Image (cartoon, rainbow, N blue to C red):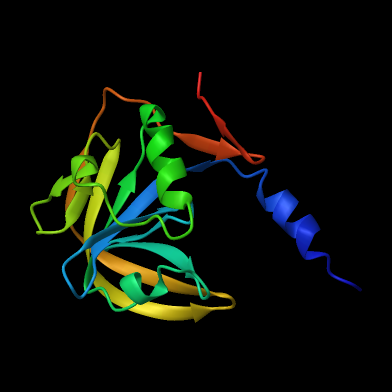
Length: 158
């Protein structure tokens, strides 16, 4: 049987996901952000979440060594942030887009929810690196709607 990776990609695109920007500091204490949709809850005790990073990502040198990171779930009014931090070599955070969270890590302003994490583990996952974080602080905004993505397009929940 011949496996068609483009067919798999198209099928996976039918799964509606939220959009996040993961943030962290570089070794030089510069704040970076990258758009992701590979976010999942792992455990409540201890509180663990995960996301994955492509092995050839231009952000690998920032996020792989990071001891802490924040997963920021974007709100429906933050599509421009999603697009900006999804652009290759455009990952340094604009200071107006973030603030310092209670853990000392950069948090996206106005996000639907934020999960401030300490690195728990990293695992190889094919052409990706799976990063697991222990949640040390959270925030959420009940007055906003999520930014979602399906079949290659941003969508709105009704």
